[in-house]
Each structure stands twice: as C-alpha cells, then as structure tokens.
Amino acid sequence: MGITGLDHINIDTSKPDETVAFYQDVLGLENRPQDRPDFGFPGAWLFLGDTAVVHLNFIDEDDRFAQRSAFNHIAFEGSDFAAMCSVLDDCGLKYRTSERPEISLSQIFVDDPNGVRVEVNIRG
Image 1: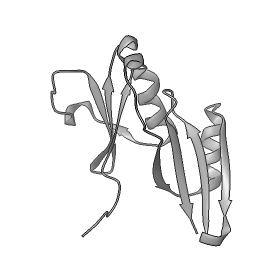
Image 2: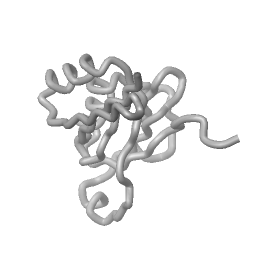
Image 3: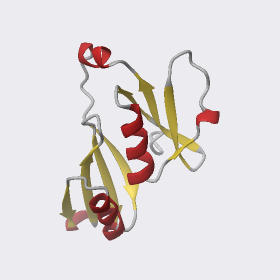
C-alpha cells in the first residue's frame, strides 16, 4: 500500500497550443485526443506510455485570474541528463540544473507556458 508513482497532474490553461506543445516537444508526452472522454469542456490528455499523466483543462484568460492555487510543481523521473538539456536548449527555454551527489540525483527545473514549474529527476 502507499504511493507507487505519479498518476496525473491537472493544469488549467488559457494557452492550450503552447502548453500541449511544451509537454509533447520538450518532455516527449503524447497527445491522444481520441482517448480523452467528452467532459463537456475542452482539454487534452498527454500520455506517457498507457497512462494519461498530464490532464489539461482549456479555460478563458478571465477564468485564469479568478483562480487561486497552492500548486507548486510537477516532478517526473527522467533519463539522459545531457539529452534533456539539449532539448531545452533547442527549444530556447530557460532552465536551471542542480546536482545532488549525496543521493545520486541530477535535476532540471523548467517552467511550462503557464508558469508551472516542471522538475525532471535523473538518478544514477
């Protein structure tokens, strides 16, 4: 029993195209519109393998400013630190890295188009 991994995160976005592109092009997730149920409002599900790990709700800009959230960041497990940094460089994104040798961890921090902090952890 207990936590066994990330199921999904849910983000409200008034920047649907940029947000889908970020999670596809930068993190390599797959947008599968045909696999998202019809909830009666627009959105997208982005998949890692068979799991929709990022759920997006497309909202109006006015709705975005009415919300308050304590949401801080999303953390994903990753691999190939150099390749991930290269993708971010190719996309022209600003990011920072952190090395935690005491726990054999390299980290990359980047913001998505909505200002959501994305952490990628590479172990080993």
